[in-house]
Amino acid sequence: AAPEYGMGGQISIHGDVYSFGILLLEMFSGKRPTNELFGGNFTLCSYIKSALPERVLDVADKLILHNGLRIGFPAAECLTMVLEVGLRCCEESPMNRCAMGDVVKEFISIKERFFKARRGARH
Image (cartoon, rainbow, N blue to C red; front, side, top):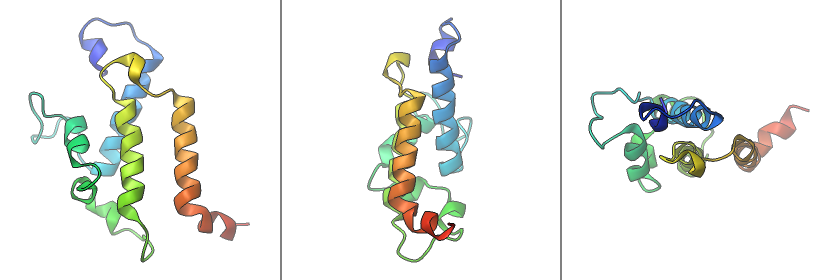
């Protein structure tokens, strides 16, 4: 749950953005926020944030890295960009979180940058 909900905050779209960010971090790291690795101030968000960008492959789910990526694909760069979007969604303050429209634009940009060759092959 978004941090503001623990402090009696109102349900809002900002909480949904936070949840979306957590979902992204879970999907790409393979770790849940409730993993025994985390506790106190060491959270899924701080775990990911501390690894970017130099150690992004250390925190990435190994199944992603070994699941059909073409040779030479810049996995570290792509994953860093995706995880950075997730972290911006998980900002502590609701007002500092990304708007979902901006998240969509970021993902379209990432898709076009890293998967443009595949897009053209489908037409």
